[in-house]
Amino acid sequence: NAGVTQTPKFQVLKTGQSMTLQCAQDMNHEYMSWYRQDPGMGLRLIHYSVGAGITDQGEVPNGYNVSRSTTEDFPLRLLSAAPSQTSVYFCASRPQGGAGETQYFGPGTRLLVL
Amino acid sequence: GESVGLHLPTLSVQEGDNSIINCAYSNSASDYFIWYKQESGKGPQFIIDIRSNMDKRQGQRVTVLLNKTVKHLSLQIAATQPGDSAVYFCADFNNAGNMLTFGGGTRLMVKP
Image (cartoon, rainbow over all chains, first blue to last red; front, top):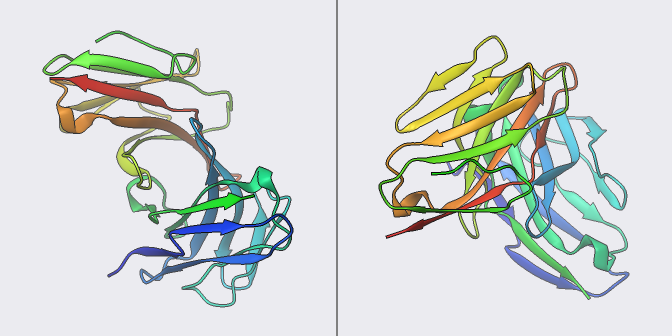
């Protein structure tokens, strides 16, 4: 198993540009989520999905869209990037009802918005 | 080691000493708590967890204590090693809301 993979590892955007952060998992996990981590802070939940076709908002959803067309993939879209979205983004997956040691995080995508 | 709260972001300990990292949570409905370790440039890694019907749980060199009365969680690391240097986060899970909420993190630095 590759676990949770994220691409790209690093991205620089100009204000107003759009991009999609990719996340994939090969563990057949129902639950997937996106977090952002700002310097010196904990992770904050952006969006999550409890299964294919189902998504919901987390703590900080504004400026981000998600979709879940397959169990494996959960892309995060920035439609019009803003400097406030400069952060490190982590994708995570776990089985439905699981958490803790059954939740896996990807390696992160560092995003810089100029 | 010395106790610190999340308002003090760095804990520096001597190799071999015990470390204690503290965390306060606010959600009374949380029924599951997790400690994560995050090394530089990596995603969080699970260390240990505890359910709200317990007040103590031990792992290998780590112990988590839960005080529901004051909504306080602590992570104790015995015989701290250089490889323990990282940022440590507590997180609480609200099963009803299906959400994991992270605290602000404490950086642990281990001096050789």
